[in-house]
Image 1 (cartoon, one colour):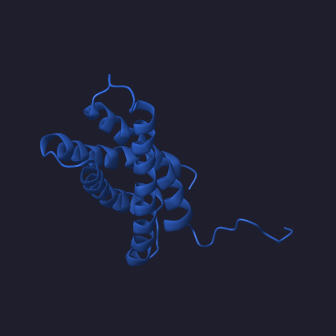
Image 2 (cartoon, rainbow, N blue to C red; image 1 turned 90 degrees about the vertical axis):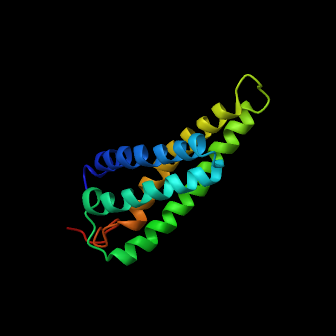
Length: 143
């Protein structure tokens, strides 16, 4: 588990490229809304993330169904928190500045949400989804 964050970042690069590509495709080529584009792109990226993190990053032995349910809870929580903060932050900072186009504001919102999502998601997956059950945090053993 020593290199789990490095492996997580490698997997994150792969699923971020996939997810952001879908988001921007939906936003700019298909004219979908911010919420639809980020939700669909994030869902596809999350599927890639689950498979790769389960097998490569955390090498989980838990049942797929059990870890999938926890994964979905973490992913949805991270999604709504991160992308709402990203959207709200950009709206708050850039709303009164007419120099920036709505196109630019949406793109910056997506990028901020993605960065925050990555951090929250790592800790959620490491501590909740793919945690080792035999890991001892506190020990009363005096050895």
